[in-house]
Amino acid sequence: MKNLLLFLALSTTVFLTSCEGPQGPPGLDGINILGQVFEVTTNFSFNPETGIQESLIQIPNDIEVYESDVILVYRLEKVVNDGNGSTADAWAPLPQNFFFTNGDIIQYIFNHTFFDVELLIDGNFNLATLGTDFTSDQVFRIAIVPAEFASANYSMEELLEVMQINTNDIIMLPN
Image 1 (cartoon, rainbow, N blue to C red):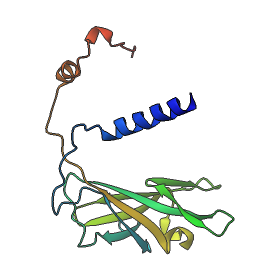
Image 2 (image 1 turned 180 degrees about the vertical axis):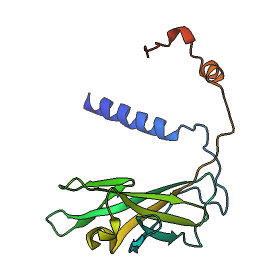
Image 3 (image 1 turned 30 degrees about the vertical axis):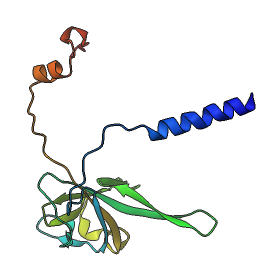
Image 4 (image 1 turned 180 degrees about the horizontal axis):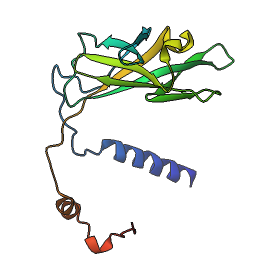
C-alpha cells in the first residue's frame, strides 16, 4: 500500500511538472521591466520664501524615467538588530508625519519630474527652528516603478458592461 501511494505521488509530480501551459510574454532585449531603486543620504535646507525645508535629489543618469512611471519614496526609519548580529533597514513610506508633544507637526513629502525628486519637510511652525535630527543625514530609498498609461477610457456604464456586472446587483448606499 505504501509503495502504491509513493508511486501515485511520484506519477502526479512528474505529470504536473511536464505539463505545458500558455507561455508568458516574451522578453524584450534591452528593456528593463523591473523597477529601479537607489538610496541617497541628504541634508535639508530651509527655504525662507516657502517656509519649508527642501532637498533636491537628481535621478541617476543610468535610470530612465518615463512620464507614466510611478515614483515611490521611503525614509530610513531605523536599523533593526535581530540580536544575533544581523541587521535590517526599516523603511517608512512618504508622506510621513511626526507629532510633537507641544502640538507641532512636521510631514515629509515629495514631488518628482523625469529627472529629479524634491524632498520636502512641511509643518505648522517655523521650520527654520527644526532640529538636525530631522534635517541632517537623512537616508531615503527612491523606487521607480515602470508603468504605462491605460489605453482604455471607459465610462462607468461601459466598465460595468465589460466586466459583465448587472447594475441591478449593485447596492446603492444612501447619501
